[in-house]
Length: 406
Image 1 (cartoon, rainbow, N blue to C red):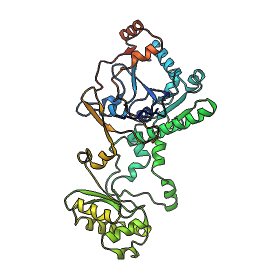
Image 2 (cartoon, one colour):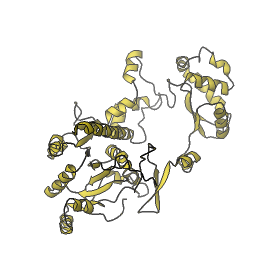
Image 3 (cartoon, rainbow, N blue to C red):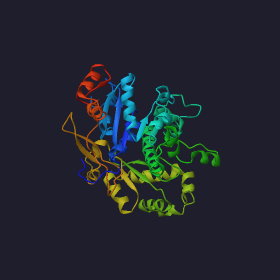
Image 4 (cartoon, helix red, strand yellow):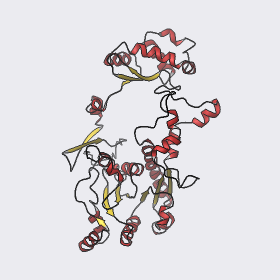
């Protein structure tokens, strides 16, 4: 838990989050970490689908990525529920949603209408393929985007099928991009008081992250090869096995670093070898170069090779398991993992706030909330009394917390 007392930079910002699963929750996760009041509007009885991503019955993703947020379980398919949702949006600076394009309009929540009532409102519209284009109506889970973006065709090995990442990579990247877009829109609003719509596809941030691959293709006429951990942009580069069956990662991203590697493996003559003199030369002979480095590294156990290369100022690191990472001296020294009080157990370990601001750092106040936990307080703030809230609970318009996020 943070002990900082400075005012968070986004304090006073209200965000209504209608999104489910990952991308939208990453947008609002970042905003909430830095002081925004994020109100998750969830379906009664079920909540955000992210709650269902469980390990040993515990909603670990929810607890971590919905920390610092509030929850109201509201059935806005009912007229009174929709009235409450409109009131919440009217009070907000930002609305985040990830329905299929056109769904807000069908619910009579078109951004232009919302902004007529609330001119400063920023609306983040998240979808797989964007609000325009021939695929705007297609479903777009991250796995499809990771495939279509070109990532999968680059990932894996040449003699095997393309490989998807083992995490929600497209969603995570889009979420970070979306949080940045919100800050830019807020800066624009500072000048003229007007909100705007952010059209955030999962595809475009993922595509942009992969580099100038279209330009590379047009210039070379060649597709990027699936080469495992090798890279033609940085040779030598790979994950190498050591004599004790563990692994290290090495990358020579500059000419100077490659020359250090050759000296460190007692092969300084390779610096002027025509096969390895420049990175294009090394890329042309990538497997031969890789084999030389691999053979040398395999002579040593992991600790010894790390020590040898570190003394030679070569960029090398261990490839730890999560068991080794948990409690690792670097992780401990930076405070990368923090223990946050939990309703289901004494504490819950999660990543610290990132990035680290020197004067107005982010803070962790609490884990992801129980479903509907903040509904009564939010409704009271809107002017509803206890009798109103009880009646709406009985009618299924809202659901209040019964404890437990899992």
